[in-house]
Length: 122
Image 1: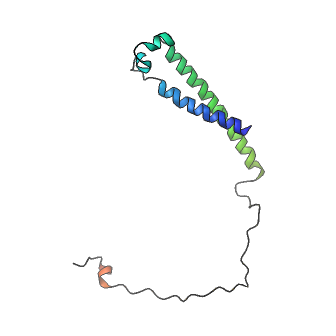
Image 2: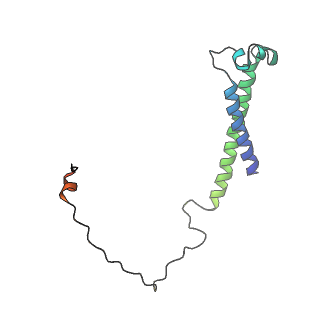
Image 3: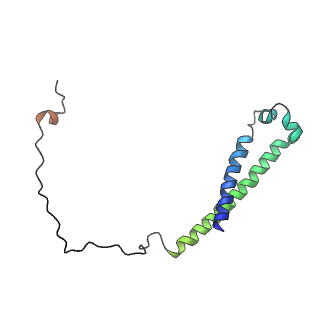
């Protein structure tokens, strides 16, 4: 069921993107989106604006509903175990009987005067 909602969610998102790109701005005339005068024969004089706006609104409602459905499924998954829950398998600890090699630590090398002053030799 979750996969079906996820597929609908992606289709609605892509549909909204496509419909928004098809719509024209307020300053553009109707013929600019479909060629010169072709929209008059397909949707009517102002039909393309109403059709695209309503289709975008319907897809927006589908998008928000699928978003809520996916959120509900997600909350059901995390209700069984919290975010800060312990891992299901215990972590393995390092046995204390293994010797750890010691590495001698040498003091840092003294810096020369040119690097302390921040000057660049010429």
